[in-house]
Amino acid sequence: MKTLIWDFDGVIVDSIHECHEIFLATLDREKTALTNYAGVSELAPTTFENFSEFRSKSVNSADFYGNYILLQQGKQLNDANLSEISSKIESFLRYMDAVFYEERDRLLKEKGKAYYDSLKVYPGIAKTLKKLSEAGIRQAIMSARDKGSIAQIISHFSIPDVFEFVIGHEVDKGSRHVKEKQIKLLKAHFEQPPNPATKFYFIDDIPFNLKKAYGFATLLFPAWGYGKLDSSYVSATTIKKPDDLVELLLE
Ligand SMILES: [Mg+2]
Image: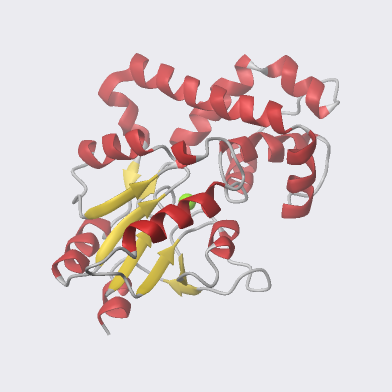
């Protein structure tokens, strides 16, 4: 029995403008702390292009600030530098992760339904979810977003709710190692009798995340997400458009 595990942001939903808006709000609020932690006298302005670059290299929102500090220090944005800074100032980055979600909730309250105008479901996703479900493919979501917010977005956009299991960052909030924990819980769910899953597929736009599922799932990379696939880092099959998943999983 085949099971497809979906990442959410950058695969099902285009949320980069939402993330950027929240990010700007957090920069405003925590300017002094960020300046101190970066060891610079002033923060250089961040453009949407900068943000898009480090968004694609971030496992969670704590990573946004790790990458942001690296950028302020003129350092390269790579996993080694990010791991180093994350281990040095872990509690500050966890704090910023919490600030990110506080600001999101504040904006959500302030804007009401208009909040969702900055989000978009990628074309072809709804149809693909339905087709796969009708063909008996089991589906799940494993995301760095929290489960509650995923449910709100699914309901707001009437995305077909074909997911038998949804797991978000609530299992290990703010941690860079949340994927390991999620994969463990996901396996425990899907390997239960009487119909244990036999083959897992995982689609995610962040190569860091795909690498963590190596050996557990067939790795798929969406051509429409935020990340760039670096084949020296992790090998995955690029999926050009959502509908190609139907062909691949039903073959
Ligand atoms: Mg993603």
